[in-house]
Length: 162
Image 1 (cartoon, helix red, strand yellow):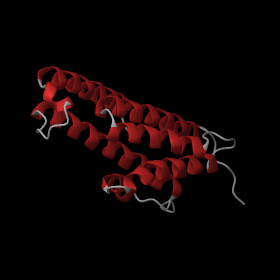
Image 2 (cartoon, rainbow, N blue to C red; image 1 turned 135 degrees about the horizontal axis):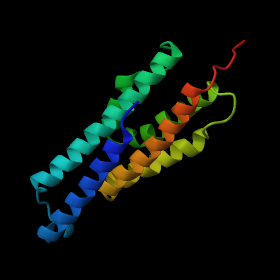
Image 3 (cartoon, one colour; image 1 turned 90 degrees about the horizontal axis):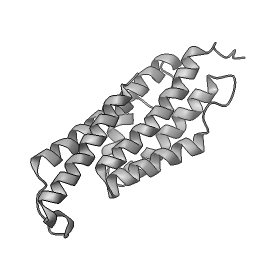
């Protein structure tokens, strides 16, 4: 299971870097095409890479639990976040499928698939379009929800299949 607390720290570090960058370089807010400071670029890059690693790790766990029949492969789950335009749909689709899988392994409804998909989509949209740091914190809030659902399935007895 991914370490969610690391993602929260990276999100807060990125948000702090954004505040510092805007304070020291107000031209960043004026719409001028200026390169971001290196510390801001690195904070954004590292937090995004860690998010992709966490998505990959979730899918490794699910692939193991499903015996390899889960349709989303770990590398595909991570890399599809990098495809322009499609990444917005993907941010909704994979968490929804994740919730469907978790519910199929549970004796009760653990996660609501549509709500899970929308939570991840809105967090990803916020990350891409508005504020990377706060968006990353929101993404890892969604990851906390995903981890809690997966943990419940791992701790409960398996559902009998017919």
